[in-house]
Image (cartoon, rainbow, N blue to C red):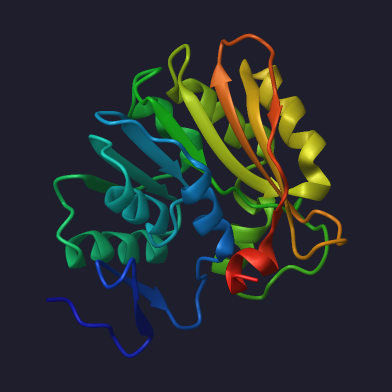
Length: 234
């Protein structure tokens, strides 16, 4: 069994069924990943890819809550990709989850168009040089568009999906229009949308969107989710 190193932490999820290693001072996943994994609808025997997988949290969670055939996690940062690979081994999921240390903009060299049934992504929310850049480059890349714009993320997702393939994203509510416009430009039609609010009577901070490639126009707006109430059970 793998044990955490001195610079790592070990947490358990799903009543102890899942163990997750993370770096103590590097980039650590947030509630965004948990919200996206809950929002996504994955069917049995589907092939799923997660762009910007970090420590692999989304494929790891979905491997326990869905019957998907296989998961691929793409991570451009070497340290995070290494942690994700360790998590796959730690949870004995090598037969279902594969982690690649790759730049998502180079995926055309590794996968044929339309190879996956589902693409998920929790891309960086902030434009490059918008606001203070974290001095930790690992955190900066995860939070700002240092290595790829939202347009590039969505173009990569569209390439990986066949007609009627589905993509799931979580993004900043303040940039929701950027997200929706670029999805439609890439033939990923928004089908289901949910606004996430920190608390009742506070403005939305996040947006969850399910889109279908080469599909007709019909959007369902779900009831808003109040994050504080969802976490505390109030």
